[in-house]
Image (cartoon, rainbow, N blue to C red):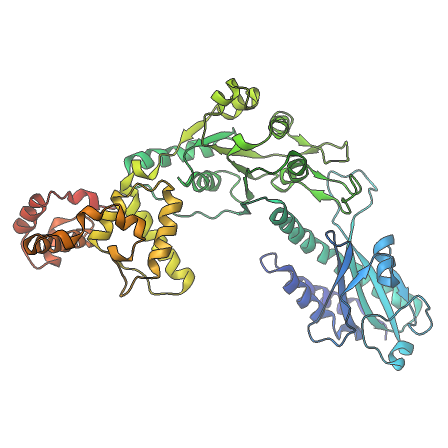
Length: 514
């Protein structure tokens, strides 16, 4: 029965409604195939996507569909393989009469082979605005389906309809492949996403001044160097700047520079075209292209080889990149924020860093101090991490940190800074009970660092005083440093609280979080 235009549009609307880049690609493909199944007499819709790692076509079909024990195809094999190799649609008016139709995948009856046609169309990558006219589009995979055997004109119309569906699939596939490509290429640590504003703890005067400078750094596209020890929150500060900038709706891509070899890094940063080298079976965008219009954060830039530093310099100067195996210049617009634990200008003087790159990057710089130099931030950070871990692991939230635990945390050195604090608290949650974090819940290394204050060495009177001091501190924490409210909490007078605070040499302002 001939298809009507409104029927096709209705199906396309239903397919479009299933597209959601926030969902995994496999879930989207399954939803699209469910829409096609049964629509316009279609049966057994399936998608074959190319896997560069294996060189095979990986099949996707509706879960539960009866099929042969095969889920991959070789390019060039059967109708599906031919469509992928040629990039052209293929129509089989009658499966039974076509010798090239192998019937390898599904369990079709002889009656179905005689009454059904098979349609297969290529899934072509979306056109790139930087491509020259008539540049061939890359074949990402194929979309195949069983269709009622109709007239030649009707089968051609159905094939054209499938091409439109394939174009919709291609957009989502490219989005997913770009993300997977970044995930696979990043050596150790990576992140690529649209950043939302996240809490940035700045209780100490030092961090408040640093936070106040973030809007100034966000108002420019000039490169920025963030100096500091490992785990001080340099990437968090970079994300804060990105969120405050005009690029906040574009990607924030972070790259952890490690000991990856220069050749691999070139592929990661520049990308490459198909056949640029023996294993380049598919064109791949590099990080620069994937970060276009966004912010690129490089942690420990001093660890990058000099050749990669020269590449960064050329992108800073020219604003273009060329893929490996190509001479075509691709424009990119990127904000660079980098971090380092060493002075890159001093490294440049020692010929260990590109001198011109150091000058361009270091025009704007800031230093994040270690946690031991801003101890006022430790407890607010701890409270934030404890709340996040409770939500993530669906466990009881810690509503109180005991005074001894506060004393241990604020006096500990934390050589690993915020990262060490976070991992220590994750360990502590395993021992925490009744929603209270106690000193005995903390890791042994933190407890051992203050063993001289162990209560077992105290007299009865000293232990009573210690308990009283803990009650007062807990009340001050709850009252946000307000001594009047703390007195009400303890059902005593302001005069007595004031006397006790002086006796124990406490500073009520220390517990004011505002």
